[in-house]
Amino acid sequence: MAEISLLPANVRVAAGRRPVAMAVGAVDRSYKHAEVRKQVLVVVTSGWAVMCFDHNLKKLWETSLGDDFPHAAHHREVAVSVTNYTLKHGDAGLVIVGGRMEMQHHSADLFDDFMTSEHGREEHRRSASEKQASEAGNVDVRHFALYAFSGRTGALRWSRKNENIQAQPTDASAMIPQHNYKLDVHALNSRHPGEYECRQFRESILGVMPHHWDRREDTFLQLAHFRKHKRKELKKTQGKNVVNNVHKPIEHNPLGKDDTNRISKVIGKAADLAGSAKGKKSLHTVYIPTITNYTQVWWVPNVVVAHEKEGIEAIHLASGRTLCKLHLTEGGLHADINGDGVLDHVQVVGGNGAEQTVVSGSMEVLKPCWAVATSGVPVREQLFNVSICHYNHLNLFHHGDFSRSFGRSFDPSGLEVATPVLLERDDGHKHRRGSHGDIIFLTSRGEVTSYTPGLLGHDAMWRWQLSTGATWSNLPSPSGMMENVVVPTLKTFSLRAYDPKQVIIAGGDQEAVVISPDGSLLTSIDLPAPPTHALILEDFSGDGLTDVILVTSGGVYGFVQTRQPGALFFSTLVGFLIVVIGVIFVSLHLNSSNGGKPRSNGQR
Image 1 (cartoon, helix red, strand yellow):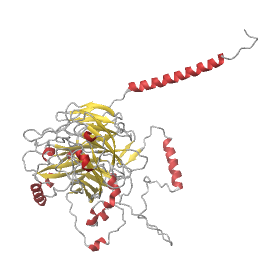
Image 2 (cartoon, helix red, strand yellow; image 1 turned 180 degrees about the vertical axis):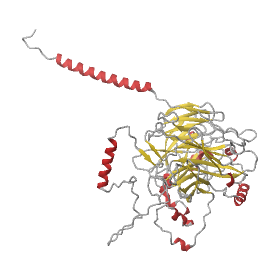
Image 3 (cartoon, rainbow, N blue to C red; image 1 turned 135 degrees about the vertical axis):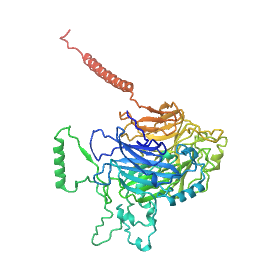
Image 4 (cartoon, helix red, strand yellow; image 1 turned 90 degrees about the vertical axis):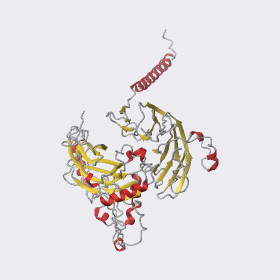
């Protein structure tokens, strides 16, 4: 359809022009329903050049951020977010770019080899080099840097280059309102270092879960609305009622409407009827408001959440100040798996990294083929410790040394595991989105196992286990290097757009399978080449059905989900035949009843 070169127009220099991140999104503030929204493409290169193109790959703007970073550093993680929310009147959309740099000790470009060389680097030497480079440069390479640009013009709206938070005297702490739920920039400037944690936003933190980080592709930016934790209401005392607007929830009313006023409701209904009387051709126009320091509308985001290697970080969207930062253990799944409102952590390892992984909050070494779930940040208790391998598939013993000795004949060497996922399941109770469900595990032998939390949130009950063809192997070469690492896939998704019911997809090096929540195999996909990235689940055909994109070292493959008209026709035919048989049966019954009546004597 179109192509564009990322090299400069005047000087054809290829250094620093390798793309390391891309993102698309719509930046127009107003649009009409059922109207095709044209999107823009934002590209970030290895030299920190940010370029924006329209839908025809025509360059809209370009800016360079390379001067803010030392020349000996390369990207450790990077992410881009494109939205149609704006920060200044007259702008069109917002582009947020974030990344963390790492000191480079080789002349080669290590970005493509990040996954294979990450665990083998010398941490102490890197930390010393990064500290020295941070003192000399503008950006602290040890922290996640963020930049916000205008969508159409590329004008810089704010930047967060470091996290220098100065401690305040004790006198200033008394001036901070203890019940202030507004996330305005003036309150953020007077934040106490003790409020730097995310405890005051515990419900909002759970709203952006689950979180996991295994490789650089897992870093992403997410817009959200953060509110402080509501304290319990004080006990009412006799006397004059005092109105406290602090605990008053934000009204979920559209802009310009007041549902509490009867007159305004009548006028609003009349306006809606007048608008609908114009005919179906008139389309409703949606307008995205401008985000300011005082925006308190519940459906408008006020923070950008960065899911990073070290955890999650919430940055105030209007000012770029750090709101809270939660350090989470690398690896595993971070989510509220039992729905008790406390963040949990599920860990599982294979045979290769079992000797290096320690259970969170304890000194116990995580054993192969065993999954451990802990609750709280920091860890307060252990929820369960269960097996995920086939050698103990009956799960008669979940704890103790006897269960471990039960599988001594099993050889875990070479076994790998994928990061577990949470499959939401309706149990009849109301839970927060992204919490309470089944935990799904996948091993490199193709074993998919499902557990569900216990009745009281502790322990786990085994639901089902399925042996599939989603197997893979990442054996190192004789030289010790691993080329074309196979990246497994374990995700949950909906087969159709806006379908609340989710299914599971598990992918290996040669096959991917789709599994229903109850453990039945729906379909399988033969992969033409081993995947170098996790399978991408998007509707690129535009038919409302989720499709699959496979990225390999030699190309990109797309698998389209198709409807089965034969099944629909057969079902319709069977239904029609059942109706016909019913009609014939009723007619025969009526005829037989009429023919069985006795005749009168006068008739022959």
